[in-house]
Amino acid sequence: MGSIKRKHWLAWGGVLLLALLILTAMGRPPICTCGTVKLWEGEVFGPGNSQHLSDWYSFSHAIHGFLFYALGWWLYPRLEMGWRLVIAAGLEMAWEILENSPMMIERYRSATAAFGYSGDSMLNSMADGVTMTAGFLLALRLPWKVSVALCIAAELFTAYMVRDNLTLNVLMLAWPVDAIKLWQSAA
Image (tube, rainbow, N blue to C red):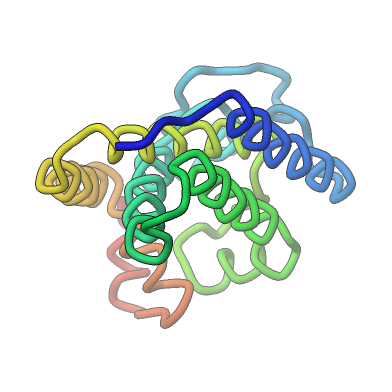
């Protein structure tokens, strides 16, 4: 299975810290501009979405962890597991930085049902990095069939609950479908 050593955790923390510094330089708010910190924000179209510790999109970030684990296993089978985790953290935090760029925020507003999306708070971005890590560590410990089943279950659950998930998010960013946007808006 491979172990994750102290040096790997330090590098992982360095990746998150670097991302935090970049998000700070980008002017992202540290916490929700409402002034509170919540463990869970369940309102997808509300102003607190992507601002607190977790929300419906946390499931997608956990799936990122499963996917990054599989990608590392496939691309770097001889690389220490800890360095695979550091690479996964780098990919996740690079996404967080891109996701919070003005270009991507505008893309979300124009191509998806996230009309009022204003980006993530730094707290939410860091929590997304931790959630991805939890997904990665689960994938490390679970049989691959269980990992696949969990990813499918999370996708189906969030599609049912909020009419969105990782698959729909990627599809709508890459190739918006008006019928899906209309269906998502009706949530």
